Image (spheres, rainbow, N blue to C red):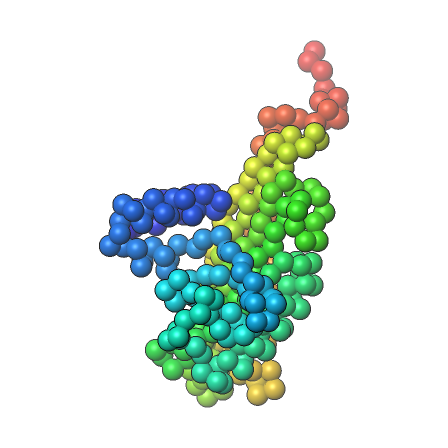
Length: 258
């Protein structure tokens, strides 16, 4: 199991589904562990009742059906699928509305979903998902990429309140994949993933509640992840390309050999 997880951490995100399917065939007795611990590129489905798109993942799946955060119904229909309590469902609805605004401001489009469920420690777990398609055919396209996607998964474990203080544990994963194919850049493909974790103890304000605290954690974490991706993937790639194939202006500035 440890070797399988190590292999999946080194697989490019766009090949994750194929590699995971092969591992499930080789290790069927570890299927539940692999599906729960390996993050896959997110998929989107349309909720026919609300007319809105929602994101599919392991956190809203039961059997072969997925629960929509908009209508709270399973697609395809499932009679005995689990649902959050009425109080948690109210918070889930509010979180989806707020997170949609956050997604539009930071990503200029895409899809987002928030799912919540009770845990065994008298607290609850919230999963915030964002998927942005940056390909030529995508909504809000800018035309620079042949293919491109950004998948963000934020899972927050919220502990029970103790003397006005609540413990939060955030685990965030971002999967990035892009491909260019034009005359100026040629054919270029880059993909990778990054995962980080953060712990915080914060005051639980009656006016703002959990949603404000979780939003602050996600906003700070996404900023750190974007900076890390920029430095690790784009920064190192640019450094290697410029070293192997220096731009013409750099070659002209070099001092000729005596």
